[in-house]
Image 1: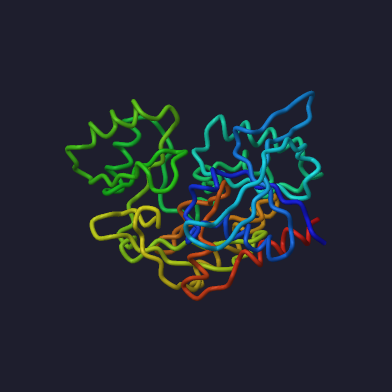
Image 2: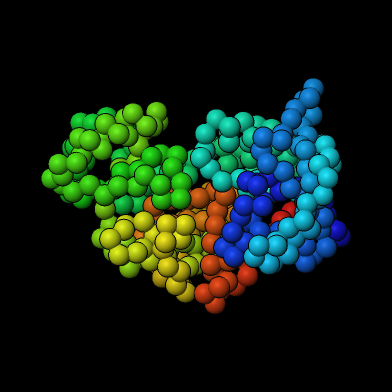
Amino acid sequence: MPLTVAVQMDPIERINVASDSTFALMLEAKARGHELLVYTPDKLSMLDGKVSALVQEAQIRDVVGDHVTLGKPVRLELSTANVVLMRQDPPFDLAYITATHFLERVHPKSFVVNDPVGVRNAPEKIFVTEFPQLMPPTLITRDKAEIEAFRKEHGEIVMKPLHGHGGASVFKVAREDANFGSLYDLFAATFKEAWVVQRFLPQVVKGDKRIVLVDGVAKGAVNRVPQVNDIRSNMVRGGAAEAAKLSPREQEICETIGPAIRKRGLIFAGIDVIDGWLTEINVTCPTGIRAIRNTGGPDLAVTIWDAIESKL
């Protein structure tokens, strides 16, 4: 049955269609005959408890440089849509949290993916700490003495903002590093929240594996290899995508965290694994669909839509 699908996303005109997971989901929705409406989070409104958005019908094509034709903006009460895809990029800030409160008002009458309460209660670098046995040694703090003690114990470390995304502001710090004081001052002036400090994993040079879980079950993976002289493997930072399969350890990780992901209504989640260690659970706007397919893996847009439709 054709569905009305509202997609909450960043401006569709600016996306890179060759790699964008949201666009892959939209293409599959189109293939199933669903109506596609798009809007940006700033177009949300709540009047007397009813949530609406200024939406535009989107006619999409898998053509770089000519991928969308937008219709006239109209105000839509979101509870009249069958499905809402919450797909705007982080940062996970108060604006993002506010959007989850708005969408909570329409879910599950309009089925929101991912569940807005689940997203709000699972900040990606905090949710993962529910599984310390799967992680490298990890400290979350702003306290300089705690960081120095952690560095003394573990040697090389990685520092990154708690609510960062896309590999931004990720730094490697040596056990003895003259830049540490300046880096600490920079973080203290830039970020109000705590930071994530982890033991550095040297095997990151061989790749950081993105594994996509659909309704808590691992369905595909891609290995992302960083450029020379960079520890960040995110493809937006120049990481190269390679075909990948799951090791027994990675399968164990997925089976361990899967029930918690499913319980929170997080149908589309992406986890990052380096050398058998879980580092993040991404639930706000996970990526990897097109990279997995482009490296010979399955089309997970199909799998995700099958999961969505099975729950309607």
